Length: 62
Image (tube, rainbow, N blue to C red; front, side, top):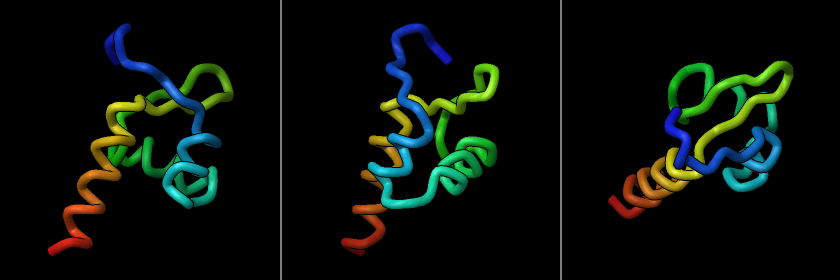
């Protein structure tokens, strides 16, 4: 992950995406979202969350 990428915690990712924290963590682990784990906390990049939301909106519009 690049230093310029703003990281957000998995709990916040979950609220943004409307999923559980566990689902947000699985999305990071699977690579659906770019992120990593620091000790016991999971993080995703704001850019990857924004990209995921845009893809979901695009798919819904199709």
